[in-house]
Length: 314
Image 1: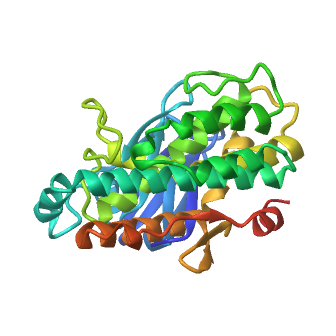
Image 2: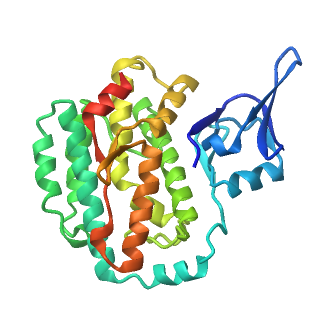
């Protein structure tokens, strides 16, 4: 896996040259600038403009190398992702295994996912010296199988009200205010990264643990990103407090700072410290081991290292 994040905002033609990407930019003066990027160095590529063209060979190469790819529409909203279709030799076997996962495994997995999500929300509030972190910490410890008490929703009501100190703020996917826009953008990046890791590991994302929407091709993605959402929330809160307190709308500098989260070493996982992108890969690998061995204890969950996060972000 590479380490670079490529964020394309200008009119561009993307081709392949010598098994690497060639980015061809045309300036207003009609001068052309060509930039060659090693495909092995790229972890994530974000097409933040509709004014680009890409060859079929370039798409094939991105898929072959497992590069997470996200496309943005004309209204600057995430619109689609590109993931490899046949990257795993045991795809059919994995599909059958996914279909055969027991309800007991799903119940325990979802319980632990929500525990981890609320725990990271608690760490986020603690980072900002919010007294409500204690309440979330207690909630995280009493989550039941399949979150039957709906502790996730209880946590959300406390969390959002406390984190952004705004009585009128409501977490809504379609809202255009700066906070919701930054959250939606970050979560889309997170979603694309998780989809890539699941596909490379042989999973069919349509088969979820909790999410079972018949119109959603990424149910499993939406299940497994839950413990990672708070990393985006903390990053956004820091950016709003330090750089963008007066911003009303998303712009290119904000988007680039949001994308940088993938490369921040802000995650405690599996006994070490990792970038967010690498942590997702580790998380998926351990989830796969747990599924194959039918052993929920093999799933290793991420935790926010608030001290390192602070050092990285300031």
